[in-house]
Length: 621
Picture 1 (cartoon, rainbow, N blue to C red):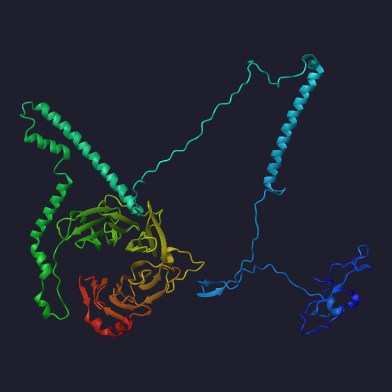
Picture 2 (tube, one colour):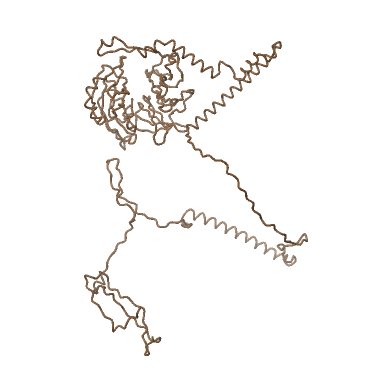
């Protein structure tokens, strides 16, 4: 790079204001250039000169522009913080922008050991340091006082210097060492074939662990019983041999049979004998009730063709046991896996004279006696089998408690609710199992007269509850901040049913005659309220095929048909008596049946098919 020339040869250039950027004048200093000597070389003793160079495109500013102050404002905003955060407002049911955004950004943070002088920790530390200093000062004062007393007594000069800390060779020994040869280390290796391996995996739930634990307990209990029977049989054998000394050959067939009894216990009480007797009892019942079985398959009343609007039902089997005397049949449920097995709940509809409850599991193969019988402390009002685990039976009782039984071992409930675990305060009218698709937990719902729809979850050792909905009086069911959930402002629930397509939707029938559609995901208010009944709603049932249609039965003698978003009934049927229950046909969308208090069963098919032909077509589309 060539050196710059003297200032006399500098050439100023004019820069247009439009082409140059708007920047203040900047003079760029250049490193000093030493002047040249007479002979042409640089003069080392001459003073250095400084030359200022202006860029060609520099803007020419006047003194006023140079003195102008330009204010710039620094803010504490975080440039990486989002500015368009939107949240859903549950009250107004719209998305709203978040007005306050967190602008704090931590670049560096570390924990320190400094404490404020006025803090409690600093005061404690100062007290500890003061105690240490006082103890050290006290010890030093004692040492100085002892030295002073010795000097005053004159004992230091007589005793001589203290050499107690000098090391002495008391045993008169000398240290010797020798160096030996260290043998080199050797590495020895060998190669073997790896042992065969196999990969396996499996899943284990808490229910499998619980079942295995119960099976092991039963096995141990059975083994103890067998050992007791063996000991008792051995004692009896010893006594018999002692009394009957004239018994002939001990190795005879009698002795072999006696030894077999000792190994297996009593033959009459063995498990194989119990199963064999049960099979024989069922075979005898099938022979006894053979005519009823034939009527069940082929019976047809010829007189039905002469009666247009009426028919007849033939009673087949009668299920009865002496345990259910003076009790009412309150509920019935078929087993989802064993089609011949059903459970019957016994209680009392005389609410002023309540007694204990009873559950009997009957089979069509043996109508003479129930397969399983177990009692409850309160009357049973509803029951339901689990759809995947047919041995689990959930019960709802008159005192508001819910229980889960294993019908194979019905001595005591597996789970039961109490006042401490959130049981209902009024009778439970309906119970329903529903599977948790995400967590795969066993859970069921219950509705009671206390106005609560409760979700019960079977945990490892307890029954957990969660309030899904409180049935408040009125058509909206909205919760107010000042409205406390007291019993006076809750409507008693009588029945409910879950939608077949969307299992989070369910409808609830109340004692005031209203039907509310609710959701598990949003329990602060009702999704829809249907008003059409004047008295208690006894049953609500969703259609199995058209999932927007449901049926309701009420004590006001009417049976009503409802459509999803329509708050008024689509159709209404007057049966001239309170309707206790209703059910859809599992194979037809237009056939359903209802039972009334006068003991009649009404089946409706053609009327609905003609009246709803157009509406069903629209819903199907």
